[in-house]
Length: 243
Image (tube, rainbow, N blue to C red; front, side, top):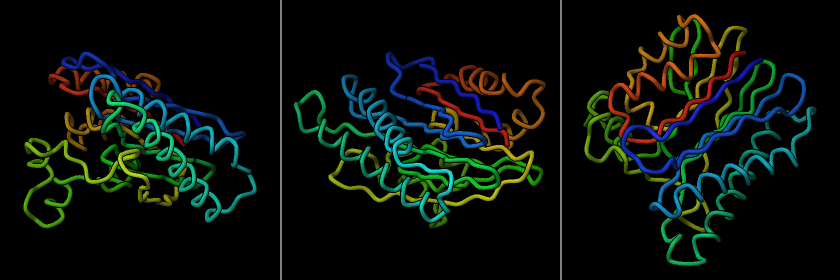
């Protein structure tokens, strides 16, 4: 199992409010997390880093190799709760932090199973022989409109409300976290990203770069380069795990 990650300011923003981490939890077990902060120039980057750090620290503290899937689910939910509490309490400390929050998508990957936690509109994709598909569901206004049949996926990418999320880490005292279990086969790949990537590229373009790129270790850079060639109005973060 291997993993690579990359984050970039993009072409327009003056500050990178995305953050990611990749952590080994032992033999053939990886933890990855991507956060996309919000709340203004003084607090978005604080929220994303604080949430990711609190989340990772709690997983490292609580993870045991013998845990079954139910126990891992509970561990991830608890870690999201801790991250939420950390960011929310910071947001109460002064006007610089008013409204701060962050998305969070994370995957604990071991052997033939990934357990994935999600809050907000950063995404996890499964990429394999059958193609590419979402594992997570965005917590966003446009996702609700897509599910109601009011927008297509492509229309959602350019909708003026595409950045309005309905759930975030740290904006309220508590948060609901979606947890997914994804079975994996040898050769499968998980891609986690902020919306700076998913808004810039079609799913099939991501699939092509991941499956047909010459060097896996350069895939994140290729995806970033494409996003930047299309303007990259937002920060761009991508993490790729190859099973």
